[in-house]
Length: 163
View 1 (cartoon, helix red, strand yellow):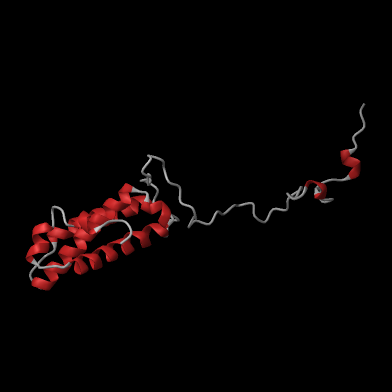
View 2 (cartoon, rainbow, N blue to C red):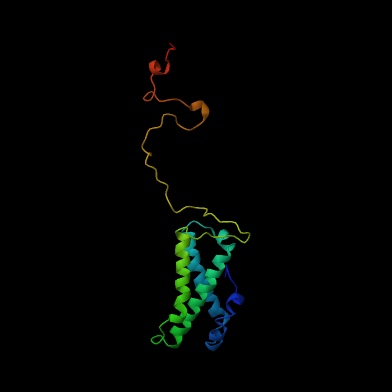
């Protein structure tokens, strides 16, 4: 368990359902691990590191909500797989998925515990330019290697006489 603890889940609103289903700590831990893997897999694709995600309260809340969803999904499936419509727990999955989509689209920013906006460390986007095949007049490199290509400059043009 990386982002949350058993105590985060053993509080309302699921405590009664967990007791009725006679779930053990191991059962809850499996649900937490599934939720953490789901959230982390979505956000690491955006470029966030685990170290960044651990510092975000939003990520912690997302893991809690998704764990609630996983627990109730499994409890209802175990008790009556063909009866439950899942309306009670799908709301948490849908909320989490909506927030994850907004983070991926950069409509929502992750904030660390100090209130600083976290920038993804590795971009999933490839920067493309329309001038990648244009030959450069001056190549960037060590300053003693700089030279202007003959295709762009002629001696008779650059040495203009003053009138």
